[in-house]
Amino acid sequence: MNSHEKPWGIPGGVLAGLLLVLMAVLVGGAALRESVTIDEVAHIGAGVSYLQRLDLRMNPEHPPLPKVLAALPLVCRGVRADYSHISWTSSEKFLPAFLGQWVFGDWLLERWNDPKSVLAWARLPMLLVTLALGCAVYLYARRLGGMWGGLLCLSVFVSTPAFLAFGPLVHTDLAVTLFSLLALWTFAEMWQQPNRRNVVLFGLSLAGALLSKFTAGVLFVAFVAFVLSLRWRGVPGQPGNKPELRQWKRTRRWATLKGVLYAALAVYAFYFVFSWRQPTSALERFGTGPAALLLRRLLMPALLYLGGVLWVVVSGRRGTFLLGHAYSQGVWFYFPVVFALKSSLGFLGLLLLAAATGISKKVRGETSSAAIPAQFVLHWRVLWVSLLVFTGVCLLSPLDISIRHFSVPIVLLIILLAPLPRMLGELQRRSLALAGAATVVALAVSCLFTAVHAYPYYLPYINALSLGRPSYALVNDSNVDWNQGLPEVRRFAEQQELQKIALDQYGFSDVSAFVPQAYPWNCQTPTQEVAGKWVTLSAANLLEARNCAWLLKYPRETLAGGSIYAVRLPAQIPAAGNAGGPPLPSEYRTFGGLPFETRGLFSHVIQNPNDLPRAADWMQTAFSTLSKSQGPPPKFPWER
Image 1 (spheres, rainbow, N blue to C red):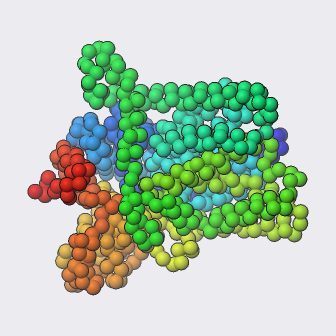
Image 2: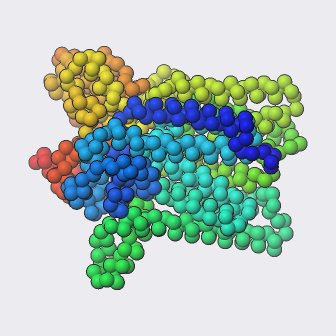
Image 3: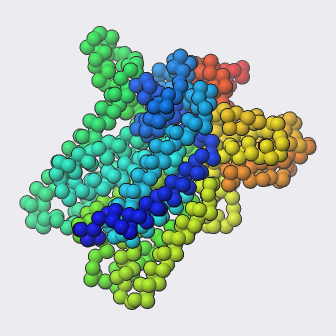
């Protein structure tokens, strides 16, 4: 791109705007058809409490920024929350708060307010965050690859099923992706020109990432990896003389440290403000005098942030399910497989074409012109080094539950497509260049076609590499269902003229607001009450969260694009262990592979909030029992 070319000039800006409008229509339309997802129950209620009470007790396992953004329109519109409710008053300590947040969030969404209105307004800021990420992708890709490179990357971004599925939902992954991308780009800007403006922008971007998700700490590894890469190969503007090189690096390292300091101060200030009215009883060992109380208040932000990081480290391990197999913990090939299955084939084709074109240019030694403008070579280095770092961390992660946790690598992969149009245009053979350009256009259009064709069922999307196998047989968790398809159950019940319908949901919230006809059942332990009737269940309960493949022997209908199934049971259900019957107790499976049924616990306290104190004590005892390997956890206190 020429230095005088405006990033949002015509016609690029117009086409980019149309692509973003298309994404907004697809994402917004899909979101308005969906029920509240599992994590949104906790995140929406927590965000509202942050703004109304300046108290961060709810959902401490995630930083507050995305939740605050989602809650802004709700608080401005006068959303109601009852802070005398036991879910709030009993949640001063960490473990009771971890349990109480689900009760508080569910009651705020479905008991104290209109759930559809709350959900729509809470998702609006997250939709804007997603569109802002699209703007950043276009602007940065255009700098790297010109107008056509920018439009190519934006076309892929707005049509990526993962972003269409999770973009409007109230969670942390798209927010941390946006701020991580901004942090990486401003880091490159700062290393190119370490002036005060670039240092401040870097610090603010880094703070946004750290306030969005605790795993944003991976950015520090990426920064170090980039600096180490300079020893292997320099970048334009890097001095060759050793004394000058040392001074050049020293100046930029100092600028980086100042940026990190600014970020730390911003994070501290954010936590300080939003925890201003939160009790500091967790620090009562420092005393109760005026000086001690002041010290406790000053230390509270650090305690909250570091406590959240510690919780991620301690709890960031869960069983996973992939390609029909259950694993006790994450496996290194999880994200490559899930990415291949849940990306559009056009995107995968563009990645292969870009790799082949780049390798071809290297082999042929075509160096007449650089694929990346000289002023952005440093930025390019930062991006691809960061891609390697983030991908490596994902491969090593013991927590493999969703494609959304791969959002940062996906965005970086998209931006690395930016030089492709320019590289194809520089091919020496005209016919080959035209064929390559036509292929790029065809693949980009196929991506957009996939997005439109898959509407509105983006969350369970899976491409033709599945070879016809359904998503529940290949992937897990929110790659299949996140409780977003409950309105489809209501429509099915109305079509069948059913006054009641059994529902085995993937989550644990009160579904009555979205499916008034629903009542709970467990597909592993069916009773004669459901015999001969239509029942519904999350697709993830068929093989992953429960062992209910026996239901596939009976007539069924697919709902919500494959997230939910409706099954017509026989008049007489075979006994457990028999053909066509439910599994034996020894073959039961649980949510996340945990040794006890968490969904039953959470569902009970949502319906019976007065049992929250007993449930919190039970959780503490259960975790202690399991850590000492003394057998199964005790029964729930209300089952004794």
